[in-house]
Amino acid sequence: MKQLEVTVPFKEGLHARPAVKLIKLVSGFESTVTILKNGKEYNAGSITSVLAGGIMYGDQILLKIVGPDEDAAAAALKAYLT
Image (tube, rainbow, N blue to C red):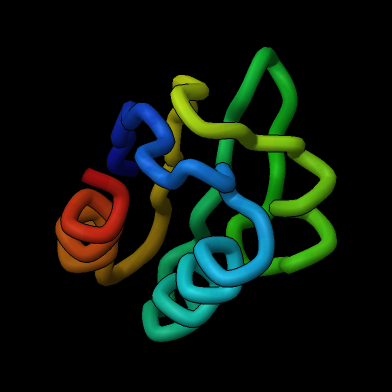
C-alpha cells in the first residue's frame, strides 16, 4: 500500500474537468485508489464518489493506493496533483 498526501492545486477543486482527468488517470491502473478527506473515504475511480467528497482548492487529501502497480499509480497521481 502506498499513501500520498497532497494539497488540491486546482482552483475549482476536484470538480468537472479535474475530476474526470483524475478518474481517467486512475482507471489506467489495476490498483485501487481511495481518497480520504476528513475521516471519510471516496472511490477515486467514480465520478459520483469524487464529486460527493466536495474536495475544494487547498484541501488536504490523502490518497491510498493498493494494488500490483501502486508505485506507478502513486507517481502518476503525484505528477497530476502537484
